[in-house]
Image (cartoon, rainbow, N blue to C red):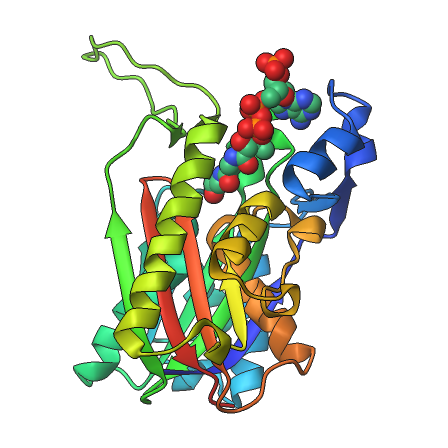
Length: 317
Ligand code: UT7
């Protein structure tokens, strides 16, 4: 597999820490110090499927392809307005593509899970060009009265077009059922027969536990992949890490012992946009002219589940 195009799209409403100070018992200082986040883009009048389609169209254009060239669409999404149909079906229609599609939910690690699925399809020759779209609106899962969670997230979409190639050097996925540290239970329709207790509440997160798991699991994933590929930390041009929190990014960077330039970040501008974070940051690097053919990149992400995903990939464009 190789990546031949990237795209991203963010909502227009940029919510600064100062704007949050107006209705939450919080400060810019607290948020900046604990998370590195200065602002996040939050959906207002936009629809998530339109942001996703925008990101996908940009990735197609970057790849020099059209929707007709795509054989399969994988959409990574945790929540959106529709339970059914899948978001990927809506995006397919908006793009004017005709191929089969599927949605996956591996939380913030979704981009790596989608890459793994894409690699399998390409290897089996079931597809030639695959579109991965990660589209997320975590702002709709949190309570905006809860300062512990709502300040952390933003909405957005990131996309990548992948095709046959040998550039994916190694990939690793893990899932550990730890359902009580990060969850959101959606309210379903009542029925005349329900007689069990159901507990619906906005996103619950035990921040410190998530923090520890995130750092130790990402470190382990990256170390394992470097060993597997025989690469040294300095052979990697960029470590493209999940953008959840600047302190987590710095903790992983310290573990790796690499310079700041090798660990790009945009969490200060977008907050945590779940699985869209990785492809959106990759798109920034790509469009900013930061990537050269042959550069080796590490991607690493973690999310609710607990899921993790990481890979080593060579830049092909
Ligand atoms: O993809 C999912 C990823 N999730 C994450 O990456 C989150 C990982 N966890 C974290 O990043 C950190 O745990 C947080 C940033 C969420 C919290 O930082 P912390 O250093 O672990 O703080 P804490 O939760 O232990 O809270 C410390 C204090 C508490 O007050 P008390 O009980 O000590 O009086 C909180 O109520 O900070 C308070 N607090 C706030 N204060 C001002 C929590 N949120 C805020 C806030 N503003 N926004």
